[in-house]
Length: 293
Image 1 (tube, rainbow, N blue to C red):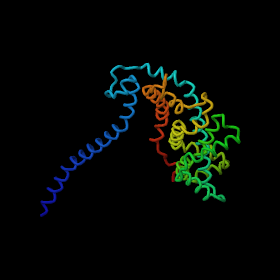
Image 2: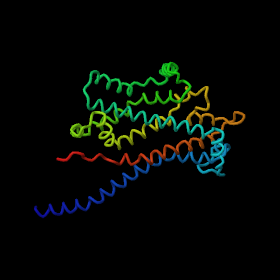
Image 3: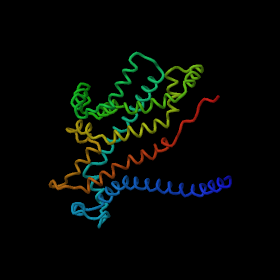
Image 4: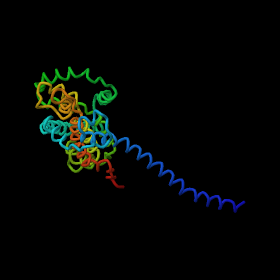
């Protein structure tokens, strides 16, 4: 009977590499399918942007019969992309900075201080995540900006986008709570107060989280459509890319121009790709232990 066990163990060892190989094949097949479904719409939009209007409307193949790179130049001129790109960058940059500033301060205060109404504040933040009232609040938001005399400025859109910082708040509070309180105590011993501890200790340790939260905020502000549309209806020079793309839907004589819309959409993707390249390291970084012992 004892001689039977070594043979069984040896057979199991022989089957393990095959199981591992099969699991790797299934894993890579799944990842390949996900990549195809993710990249196919982008490739479809890119190749469509290089087609003529006739090719798109007649439903030709994936690749264009005649590569029309002039669609990008035409879209840039027709949609005034230079101005719209600046407006989108302006809104996205200041929204990201303001959201990160308020989100980190709120997360640090909630994680470190016990104050009256703390649970109610967290409840209000969480309620904005689970209760979506959408366009219902557009009129009150616009009336509020009229009262502040910001209805004809991009700052009104920026303030409203910064106010929707609940997701970033909950994203950062977990990272703040993971930072040992011993670091705060050590900073107090060295002469730091609550605010200098926030700027010198907490913010540097939150660098990976700030990268992820910043990418999230930038993407949301860059893709925002309703607020810029409402606030720039009477001011075309303040329109963003998402609003300006709508003007590419119809060309001269009200003829549909889908190739120009696709070209404009491809151009609008480029800034997001650049931001992701710079913030990609934040997804890979992990906080190391700061306190030994």
